Image 1: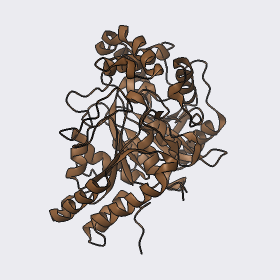
Image 2 (image 1 turned 45 degrees about the horizontal axis):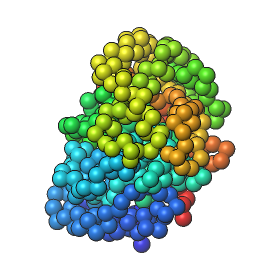
Image 3 (image 1 turned 45 degrees about the vertical axis):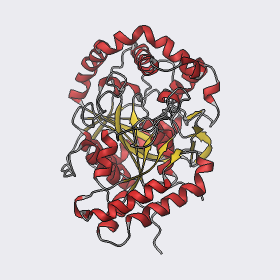
Length: 447
């Protein structure tokens, strides 16, 4: 008997289209895996077992499988995006437990492509921090359950890494896709600004946050991105020699990158050089003000999200974060500092097609109740392990994380690829070259 849990979205959709398996059989098998293993992983805030099976039957009855790129594919959705009939809690006791009337536009596109939503995944409160824990659940890294899955799309990443779904939907405001993907051995891409819709009326942290895929393969990430962007499958770019800059330096003063992550970046650089690319060491001209600019936008985005919530129901770290950001909402909304950063970095990307960096500075913090700890302790833990992601939310340029080697614990390591606006396909093609030459086991051995 063929097992569909642990298979890719491309494999599942092809089998459904060829009628080798039904959507209900695929969904039922993944629901069974969730029931068996999510207690130890903590990926899901809520599982839609009955509704998902009914929706799988609806997909089977559509009869247009040839036009469904995600036919029968189970998908998990981050709990800050609306799913019709389900509450949107955003990891907080301060949000209403009332069903949403409509799907978020990205969820609607996934369903239109034949995907079946099996559940909503855990997030840190208001998606603020890089560890997914809170009053509604804690998500652990399936490769190393003593460690956090990362955040804020930590539940979505854990669900994919544990084989509970082949793909998941998340978003990235300061690294919230790339951080958990790097921790959990997944491929993700934060698309450039405007590639994937954020949704009318939704908070996107003044243009910092982008919706995107979490997947086990570049092929699945590319497939899901095409659905989210509404473009349909795009031809892969023709191989050509690119100018790749390799930087091992942290953008934030005082934060260093640990050896496993610099080693991964060096190995990736060697692979790309052997593939015919022009690779050289070069550091972007990060301004000294980058840390302050990041903190202003990070806290201001939280202040905007918290303004209509009962602050007494928020955890202490979130209350402090929002209070610090309230004076800076106007500054963040103006976008002036982001435009200054873009102008500073554009000459570097005129000389280089792609930037390669480590994805993280060190492994994720311990899986622990970080939401019960102080604000400063949380901020230091976050910035010390993920200093390399925020700059590319501030510029609005595409950035990708792809597995590359392992940590001493056996958990995954990863690198980041960054490009100019409109180069998502180029970054995915480079990631595919790394994937081919540095193979990685797709699903964590949770069983």
